[in-house]
Amino acid sequence: MLGPGFRCDSISSAFAAAAFFVNQSTGRALCVTLDFVSLYEQMLAVAIEEARIGLGEGGIPIGAALFTRSGELLSRGRNRRVQEGDPSVHGETDAFRRAGRQRSYRNLVMVTTLAPCWYCSGLVRQFRIGTLVVGESRNFAGGLDWLRENGVDVIDLDNRECRDLLAGYIAQYPEVWNEDIGEE
Image (tube, rainbow, N blue to C red; front, side, top):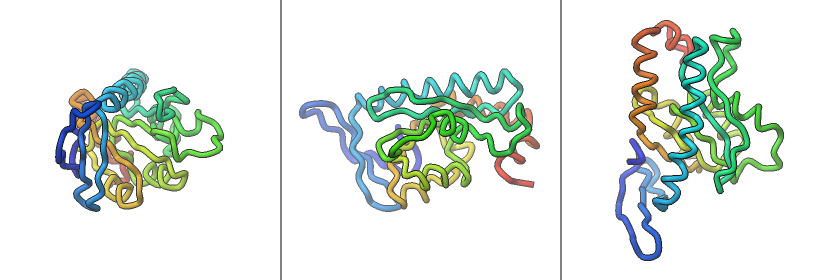
């Protein structure tokens, strides 16, 4: 399942199995082969590992990684707001900074365990990262619709491990979570 905002219209088995997803807010179709879904799940495993490391450090369990479309890992990062006392170190920004300068970001894939907040959605949009793979968006939907409307291919894997990891943290530390998303 690719999560909220997309509807699976059909699955093809002509040469390779593929699922066609339609963005319900824009009507734009997105074809994702099942090989890519498997690749995205492998990429997500890196982000989940970062989220678990962050939780072990006493931080918010949100991880991210930046990849080429073929799956080469460029960088990885995690939310370090609590650990570093720096409100700007979200998982996506940490991975982005660690990737260093790139000539172009259009053919890169940002993978994150949670739908990005507005701050991180702005980063994806500003640098025109072409594909965003999200572990889940049930705990927080962030700017996914806005990113879709602005041409970013958003793949929501609706991953149970991502959902459970963050839901547990939110239940235990609601005040830290609300601070992270800018709620009072």
